[in-house]
Length: 346
Image (cartoon, rainbow, N blue to C red; front, top):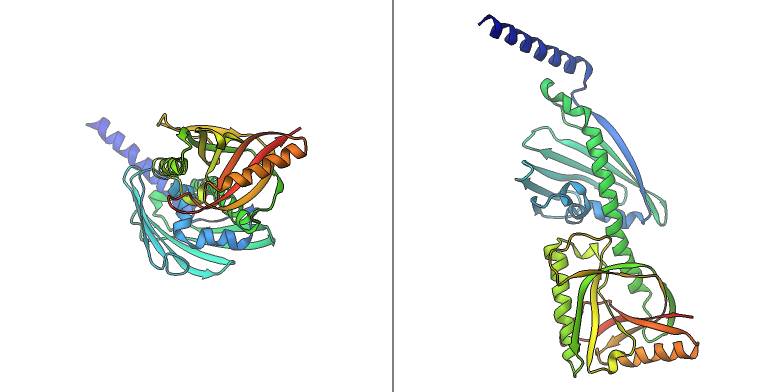
């Protein structure tokens, strides 16, 4: 009995010592700031922060969990927009609000976590360093904590900083795909032959052999595009702004064959686990390409491909595959909008 009393006294002493140290040496709340720079225009960056549907796609706190469930509330964008979330696997839930917005300059978030009545306040400021570079500064004020919970303030800044580091990588990937798509659309000149240097790409897709009779090939392409798109968006959980335009790769002159073999894939930023053996990754090496943009029936693309081949032969260049990049997703009974690229070399 005496031993139990001694243990109880020791425990009370330790709890008291802990409480006193927390009270005198640890602040009840914490303030800190984090700065980052990103090589994209301020308007492009700001739209990823003030639209909460965009925000949750790249912010690591939301993106990293496979079990989180998010509800979005109107107006969805800007001051007054809000979300609530619950993550049963990680035993967490909360609500987030945008309380103030000054377009392309400032946002104020209010975050309530795990039924805590005291919110975390986050002011985010945006500054255009140049036409293509933006500085982002987070000013964070953590909620007041009781004496026994103040130990959390020891790692709150590190946890927040780690989340921002991972989120910035995701944001760069999202903006990279968005800007690439915008630039490609703005640069389109149909039926003009151009020379371009193609960067390395990583495609996730499917290898196919299909009949080349009448419309059978294009119907086959549409069907397999839908397979790849559904796998990337549903099984892998990717959003449209996280990947590039679909690309079909085939031999330059197999449009004359009775059967056409091709690889149809969607560009991704990195490899990941693929559980379906129907799909595989394919790397596209950097090349110099002769390029034409074409809009019309899929069968009509042959004339443009022939022009690219004729140009290569005239320039005494050897040539490899033809890449067909679908600027607009292929759909049955509709015209195609494609970028035709013939890889060439000496």
